[in-house]
Image (cartoon, rainbow, N blue to C red):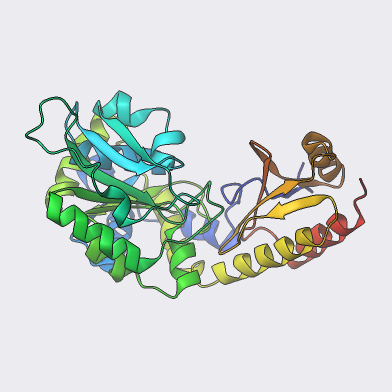
Length: 343
């Protein structure tokens, strides 16, 4: 499988030689005692980058998100998110299991909704019949939305509604740097609006593992205890934090290359007579549908026979994700293979 071109996700990347070298040279200590200098450096770097007071390293983005939800809610309360939100769909029911909260789902557009969608659905604390709404969570870029980027002005409007109603505001920033690069926005813009932000280092940025939660010192002090409760405290984890530091220093600006490749693959797909539609492409995710007469599994198998792996999202949606391990030669092979397929 080593010669496979893997477009299943941007999580499939392997550390480069330079990243591995940085990992092996990391100075480490016991992070449970806050004594790992490389972890501390990573946390300080991201906190400063986003203008937040503090940060905490996690083994996964799901854990970082779930800790954030528990930070902002009490059992029996309610979180508002989009119907396609990762925190609701793909984190094992964690919001209900770990925090005892219910989720009110908004029927948005490609994983995004508007501030006006919150009108009339926020439950106040004086109504004993309903779960008290305490948290709004959004995802940028949106995974099931095909790497779509939120309109920043809409996020500002959402923040205003949260302030007016005393709601916490959390950002699942699994692919936030893709959005920042695509929209020419800055980390500090986001740091000013959200109470907490989770940053994933193992997707477009190419680190092998790890996410970081950003917030106030009070948030992170509480998060430290919850991380321990969830089993996420680690020891000499600086080896992994070093990969995150390398990724932040070397792999942000190059995300534009992934976006360009995704756009070009999307353009190729649109010109194929067996492709019904391609969803708008803003970053590194391509979601498309085949015409009714073409079997999805047969299509996936034909690509696999040509050493190209993609994923089936269900409901007729197929997905390709570009990333830093897709070389120019691999990219040309993808385009050539798609153009030669016959159905």
